[in-house]
Length: 358
Image 1 (spheres, one colour):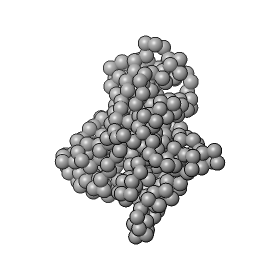
Image 2 (image 1 turned 135 degrees about the horizontal axis):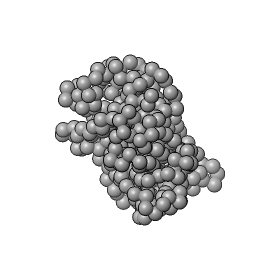
Image 3 (image 1 turned 30 degrees about the horizontal axis):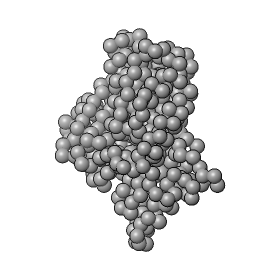
Image 4 (image 1 turned 45 degrees about the vertical axis):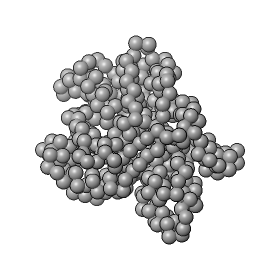
């Protein structure tokens, strides 16, 4: 291996303890004005491929969900200030829960900390809070990647890749933490409710270094798709962060993957059928279907992404990290090469090729 190589040595994950998926489905269905819409919503929810989504929000005194009496969303949408207060308290805790599963010796040798999060803001930042709570040296270099959305994990790992390639002795702690359930919106718009039913909370942590173990990061890429900037939008409102997620996204992704120049950027002249494994951001069943059709992949090619979607939903930037964790955990000698790929606001696609260390 080249001395300039960078490897994802470990990836660990954490989710909160409360499963809110079924409670949200019942709440959302009640907001729709007629039975025809409710029937369509139920059918779409059943086809979503999601069984569980987890939230940092506490249960009520009676053990109910955030939309039950006494919950955060029981009566009226709370202001952004209240949501950010909860973020400041709980985002570091969830991030630290993921970090605690990493090898303690690797954490102690951290030289750089890269944190990605788009579901909240606090200053001093989550990066500083994490560094202080871990007792990292005060000269550890920190980078905070915010508001990039679902492909921020790629940006964080790519940042670590460049650090290690320029400083081979570096040991980078990469963290993603997303609290999407803090941004529930009160609406009777079916498209908005279908968008919200996908999102949950989760955190992940990784060690990236020159140590030749795990997955070697190779050939990062970034693609901004033309005339697509309105398809995924994420704005700060008076009652949380408001996402606009167009139903056109899967179709636009599918058509983009047919373009030779985009395929070349992602596959680097390798036939898609010769890629051993795929770490695709589980942004939704229709997005995974679009990628599978676009590259004409076998039926089981995106199984790990679909399993993450089923068990956790879309956790924004943390989702791809959960897929990478599964790839590292479920070692397969036949899986030597792979593609990590995520989509987000822009509409943009970002990713990298990876190879399993010998």
